[in-house]
Image 1: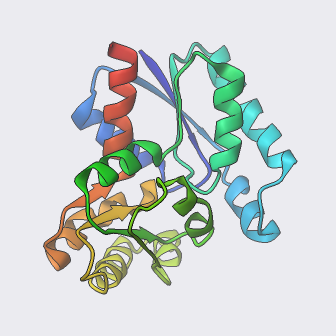
Image 2 (image 1 turned 180 degrees about the vertical axis):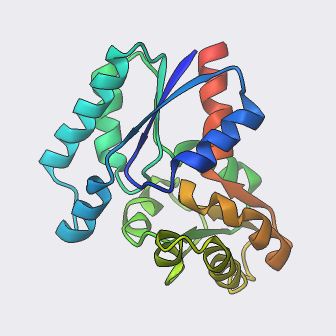
Image 3 (image 1 turned 90 degrees about the horizontal axis):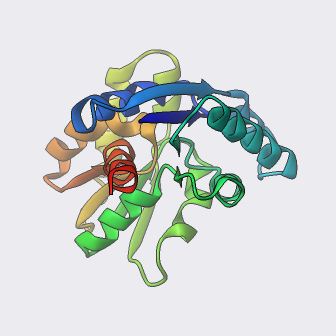
Length: 210
Protein backbone atom coordinates (compact mmCIF):
# COMPACT_ATOMS: atom_id res chain seq x y z
CA UNK A 1 0.00 0.00 0.00
CA UNK A 2 1.23 3.49 -0.84
CA UNK A 3 0.09 6.20 1.57
CA UNK A 4 0.50 9.86 0.66
CA UNK A 5 1.23 12.15 3.60
CA UNK A 6 0.42 15.80 2.90
CA UNK A 7 1.81 18.43 5.27
CA UNK A 8 1.48 22.18 5.89
CA UNK A 9 4.08 22.31 8.68
CA UNK A 10 7.65 21.11 8.18
CA UNK A 11 7.63 19.51 11.65
CA UNK A 12 4.88 17.03 10.77
CA UNK A 13 6.66 14.32 8.72
CA UNK A 14 8.91 12.81 11.45
CA UNK A 15 6.17 11.97 14.00
CA UNK A 16 3.86 10.36 11.45
CA UNK A 17 6.72 8.43 9.85
CA UNK A 18 7.68 7.17 13.31
CA UNK A 19 4.08 6.11 13.98
CA UNK A 20 3.95 4.19 10.70
CA UNK A 21 7.24 2.46 11.51
CA UNK A 22 5.73 1.13 14.75
CA UNK A 23 2.12 0.50 13.75
CA UNK A 24 2.23 -0.30 10.01
CA UNK A 25 5.82 -0.78 8.82
CA UNK A 26 4.70 -2.48 5.59
CA UNK A 27 3.08 0.72 4.26
CA UNK A 28 5.04 2.64 1.61
CA UNK A 29 5.03 6.37 2.34
CA UNK A 30 5.38 9.46 0.19
CA UNK A 31 5.54 13.02 1.58
CA UNK A 32 4.24 16.25 0.07
CA UNK A 33 4.99 19.48 1.94
CA UNK A 34 3.71 23.01 1.33
CA UNK A 35 4.55 25.00 4.45
CA UNK A 36 3.39 28.20 2.78
CA UNK A 37 -0.16 27.00 3.50
CA UNK A 38 0.27 27.43 7.26
CA UNK A 39 2.01 30.77 6.77
CA UNK A 40 -0.80 32.01 4.52
CA UNK A 41 -3.45 30.89 7.01
CA UNK A 42 -1.72 32.80 9.79
CA UNK A 43 -1.54 35.86 7.52
CA UNK A 44 -5.12 35.71 6.25
CA UNK A 45 -6.76 34.53 9.47
CA UNK A 46 -9.27 32.34 7.61
CA UNK A 47 -9.46 29.58 5.03
CA UNK A 48 -10.02 30.70 1.45
CA UNK A 49 -11.20 29.14 -1.80
CA UNK A 50 -7.65 29.47 -3.10
CA UNK A 51 -6.38 27.31 -0.22
CA UNK A 52 -8.97 24.65 -1.02
CA UNK A 53 -7.82 24.66 -4.65
CA UNK A 54 -4.23 24.15 -3.50
CA UNK A 55 -5.25 21.21 -1.33
CA UNK A 56 -7.11 19.66 -4.25
CA UNK A 57 -4.05 20.05 -6.46
CA UNK A 58 -1.84 18.31 -3.88
CA UNK A 59 -4.33 15.49 -3.37
CA UNK A 60 -4.80 14.88 -7.10
CA UNK A 61 -1.04 14.82 -7.58
CA UNK A 62 -0.79 12.19 -4.84
CA UNK A 63 -3.42 10.03 -6.52
CA UNK A 64 -1.54 10.40 -9.79
CA UNK A 65 1.51 8.81 -8.18
CA UNK A 66 -0.52 5.73 -7.29
CA UNK A 67 -1.45 6.51 -3.69
CA UNK A 68 -3.99 4.10 -2.18
CA UNK A 69 -4.87 6.50 0.62
CA UNK A 70 -4.14 10.09 1.66
CA UNK A 71 -3.46 11.29 5.19
CA UNK A 72 -3.35 15.04 5.76
CA UNK A 73 -1.35 16.12 8.79
CA UNK A 74 -2.47 19.78 8.93
CA UNK A 75 -5.22 20.03 11.52
CA UNK A 76 -6.29 23.65 10.85
CA UNK A 77 -7.56 22.92 7.32
CA UNK A 78 -10.56 20.64 7.91
CA UNK A 79 -12.92 22.09 5.24
CA UNK A 80 -10.17 21.96 2.59
CA UNK A 81 -9.56 18.29 3.39
CA UNK A 82 -13.29 17.53 3.28
CA UNK A 83 -13.35 18.96 -0.24
CA UNK A 84 -10.54 16.58 -1.21
CA UNK A 85 -12.41 13.63 0.30
CA UNK A 86 -15.54 14.46 -1.69
CA UNK A 87 -13.58 14.90 -4.92
CA UNK A 88 -11.51 11.72 -4.61
CA UNK A 89 -13.99 9.19 -3.24
CA UNK A 90 -13.75 6.23 -2.80
CA UNK A 91 -10.02 6.67 -2.06
CA UNK A 92 -9.60 6.99 1.74
CA UNK A 93 -8.77 10.61 2.61
CA UNK A 94 -8.27 11.25 6.32
CA UNK A 95 -8.20 14.49 8.22
CA UNK A 96 -5.34 14.39 10.71
CA UNK A 97 -7.51 14.59 13.78
CA UNK A 98 -10.61 12.58 13.00
CA UNK A 99 -9.30 9.24 14.26
CA UNK A 100 -7.97 10.79 17.46
CA UNK A 101 -11.29 12.55 18.04
CA UNK A 102 -13.07 9.20 17.72
CA UNK A 103 -10.70 7.55 20.21
CA UNK A 104 -10.80 10.45 22.68
CA UNK A 105 -14.60 10.61 22.66
CA UNK A 106 -14.79 6.84 23.12
CA UNK A 107 -12.57 7.17 26.20
CA UNK A 108 -15.24 9.37 27.81
CA UNK A 109 -14.98 12.23 30.28
CA UNK A 110 -13.54 15.69 29.75
CA UNK A 111 -10.94 16.07 26.99
CA UNK A 112 -8.07 18.52 27.26
CA UNK A 113 -7.19 19.65 23.73
CA UNK A 114 -3.65 21.03 23.38
CA UNK A 115 -2.39 22.93 20.33
CA UNK A 116 0.70 25.00 19.58
CA UNK A 117 -0.66 26.38 16.26
CA UNK A 118 -3.39 28.81 17.32
CA UNK A 119 -5.69 28.44 14.27
CA UNK A 120 -6.15 24.76 15.15
CA UNK A 121 -8.12 25.79 18.23
CA UNK A 122 -10.59 27.61 15.98
CA UNK A 123 -11.04 24.87 13.41
CA UNK A 124 -10.84 21.67 15.45
CA UNK A 125 -13.34 21.96 18.36
CA UNK A 126 -16.38 22.02 16.02
CA UNK A 127 -15.27 18.61 14.71
CA UNK A 128 -16.05 17.01 18.09
CA UNK A 129 -19.59 15.65 18.58
CA UNK A 130 -22.07 18.02 20.16
CA UNK A 131 -22.01 17.76 23.93
CA UNK A 132 -18.35 16.73 24.17
CA UNK A 133 -16.76 18.19 27.29
CA UNK A 134 -13.72 19.92 25.81
CA UNK A 135 -11.02 22.15 27.30
CA UNK A 136 -9.01 23.74 24.44
CA UNK A 137 -5.64 25.21 25.44
CA UNK A 138 -2.99 26.99 23.38
CA UNK A 139 0.65 26.29 24.26
CA UNK A 140 2.25 29.70 23.99
CA UNK A 141 5.80 29.66 22.60
CA UNK A 142 5.97 25.95 21.85
CA UNK A 143 5.82 26.17 18.06
CA UNK A 144 8.42 28.93 18.07
CA UNK A 145 10.73 26.69 20.13
CA UNK A 146 10.22 23.87 17.64
CA UNK A 147 10.92 26.23 14.75
CA UNK A 148 14.22 27.09 16.45
CA UNK A 149 15.12 23.40 16.78
CA UNK A 150 14.63 23.37 20.55
CA UNK A 151 12.56 20.23 21.03
CA UNK A 152 13.35 20.14 24.76
CA UNK A 153 11.76 23.54 25.39
CA UNK A 154 8.84 22.64 23.12
CA UNK A 155 8.14 19.49 25.13
CA UNK A 156 8.58 21.27 28.47
CA UNK A 157 6.13 24.02 27.53
CA UNK A 158 3.63 21.41 26.35
CA UNK A 159 3.92 19.48 29.63
CA UNK A 160 3.52 22.68 31.66
CA UNK A 161 0.41 23.61 29.70
CA UNK A 162 -1.05 20.12 30.13
CA UNK A 163 -0.53 20.37 33.88
CA UNK A 164 -3.14 23.15 34.01
CA UNK A 165 -5.79 20.73 32.73
CA UNK A 166 -6.18 18.88 36.01
CA UNK A 167 -9.95 18.56 35.58
CA UNK A 168 -9.58 16.62 32.32
CA UNK A 169 -9.72 12.84 32.01
CA UNK A 170 -7.67 12.52 28.83
CA UNK A 171 -5.23 14.80 26.98
CA UNK A 172 -5.53 15.02 23.19
CA UNK A 173 -2.66 16.54 21.19
CA UNK A 174 -4.18 18.43 18.28
CA UNK A 175 -1.16 18.45 15.95
CA UNK A 176 1.25 15.90 14.54
CA UNK A 177 4.09 18.23 15.53
CA UNK A 178 3.13 17.82 19.21
CA UNK A 179 3.61 14.05 19.28
CA UNK A 180 7.17 14.31 20.60
CA UNK A 181 5.79 15.87 23.79
CA UNK A 182 3.47 12.96 24.60
CA UNK A 183 5.82 11.19 27.07
CA UNK A 184 6.54 14.43 28.95
CA UNK A 185 2.83 15.26 29.09
CA UNK A 186 1.95 11.79 30.36
CA UNK A 187 4.63 12.04 33.05
CA UNK A 188 3.49 15.52 34.12
CA UNK A 189 -0.23 14.73 34.27
CA UNK A 190 -0.55 11.01 34.91
CA UNK A 191 -3.37 11.01 32.35
CA UNK A 192 -3.84 9.10 29.09
CA UNK A 193 -2.37 11.05 26.17
CA UNK A 194 -3.63 10.61 22.62
CA UNK A 195 -1.66 11.67 19.56
CA UNK A 196 -2.93 12.31 16.08
CA UNK A 197 -0.24 10.23 14.29
CA UNK A 198 -0.92 6.98 16.17
CA UNK A 199 -4.70 7.29 15.87
CA UNK A 200 -4.52 8.20 12.18
CA UNK A 201 -2.23 5.31 11.26
CA UNK A 202 -4.50 2.83 13.05
CA UNK A 203 -7.57 4.11 11.18
CA UNK A 204 -5.91 4.23 7.75
CA UNK A 205 -4.70 0.67 8.19
CA UNK A 206 -8.21 -0.50 9.15
CA UNK A 207 -9.72 1.22 6.10
CA UNK A 208 -7.27 -0.24 3.59
CA UNK A 209 -6.89 -3.74 5.02
CA UNK A 210 -10.53 -4.57 5.68
